[in-house]
Image (cartoon, rainbow, N blue to C red; front, side):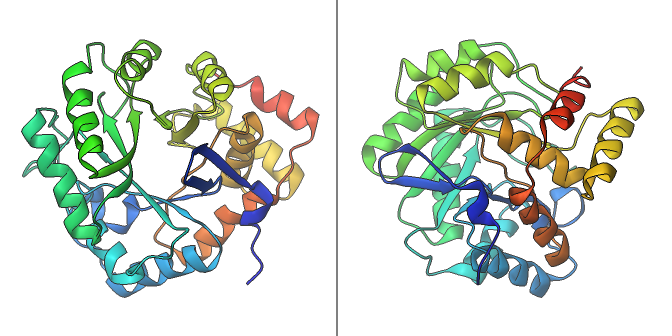
Length: 289
């Protein structure tokens, strides 16, 4: 099957790790609030299989989605995995009985989380494990030395191939790099939320992938109107324009839009072929907060 995924190309942040820049975020495969099972497990399985059929080789997940549910569905749908399929997970949080996301950053908690990811995915080693430090809505100040050192030790044991960080400041990125190499940073970033512009430019220069989450989040009504106006002019959806802007922002940007709908999946993937003209980029750049 010919897929527009190829239009966005691939990115290689480390030897042995080449990812399609158009990825897939599996969070929405769990139930409402990313808690419990989905209403239609068969459709979730079908979406994942179409992800692979479309040529995507980069799936982002976590065992605290569900918890456990999303990874179990990925295993059901795709195991044994193709050699070029890379599954990226994150640790550093857990789910409580109310569906909250409390921190789980102690070394023993991180070791348990890595093993749960491996077990539920049916893997011997994770391609990439991101250490999630901040809260759901963004980074928090503080040192990541203790938890990141624990993950680096598991990398030396062979449980993890590559390391990354998520919900972090530039200072925390530098702190992690002083402990072990990282291949990616996953932060909240989109055309309306550009606090990490300088960090993104620095990572691009270093050959480190930047993976934005919430690609269509945090828009004011005025910003949303501007995005919709550009999308209408280009004959695209708001989501497609937001994704295309990210892909054009830097060659190091990898996008991971999530959906539980096959149609929405195909719409997201089509964004890889959307080339924004200079006037559209300028108009979109003007709406950042």
